[in-house]
Length: 280
Ligand code: NAP
Image 1 (cartoon, rainbow, N blue to C red):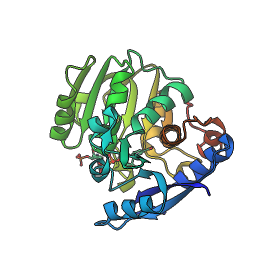
Image 2 (image 1 turned 135 degrees about the horizontal axis):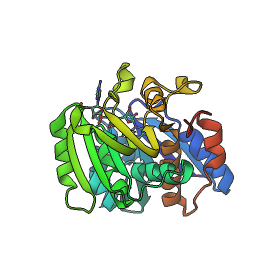
Image 3 (image 1 turned 90 degrees about the vertical axis):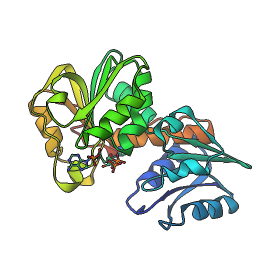
Image 4 (image 1 turned 90 degrees about the horizontal axis):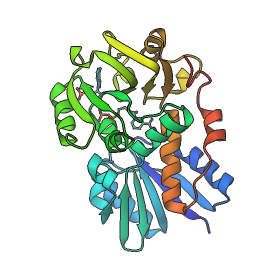
């Protein structure tokens, strides 16, 4: 019988994870079954317990359960405990390992797929919510020169920056205002602004040579044309990319944790990501 995995969320119907993991299983010859499970908002722990009892070997966790998933783990990786959020669970008998693969997925997408080295890069992160917190430690560990976090609610950005001060690179926080003016090598949009048709302004931002502007949001309607945020970045001369690569790479990291085999992501990315990705 195939080993069972699942993604838990609410909503979860939109999740591309089953398609991604099915392809990884096919290409690596692993015998797994991966499904979507819609957990009730007040019934996440019970839904995971039922899945484990039925033989589930591991799970991905998406909104709004990433924080609660920390409490289900008997052991957290450093990156999950730093993020305060878990997107991957592995069940080993009584033990439950909680990990967060989002940051590793982003770093791999930037450095390997998009060929934008992070070593000594000046990085601007827009947003200070769960997605931003989830990627911070792997970004800092990639050897960046500096990180500024800019958020609509500046206090939240300062608090997130404060938690990471003194770890090597300079880390600061502020509002979506002139605190973010400067020259950047990598700009990451980790806000959900575009979901409401808005976008953080790029006014006052300068881009270094081979700068890359990355929007974590990916959407099926952006296949032909990037959204307004990335279009504005392109007009300023930056290369642009959206978050499909991060999604595929975080999934590859989860798959590796579960199965001990790293899948090749290139063919899948070519199929799922828009053609304009990575260009100017
Ligand atoms: P979240 O915890 O709800 O945080 C939302 C962030 O967006 C906050 O910083 C919020 O600022 C900001 N924001 C919301 N509306 C805004 C607006 N109109 N103008 C400016 N800022 C605004 O959400 P999250 O979990 O961090 O997710 C953020 C986005 O990342 C989502 O769209 C998600 O789909 C995407 N994501 C992608 C991947 C991937 O694999 N590609 C992985 C994770 C997340 P305030 O603090 O001021 O409210």
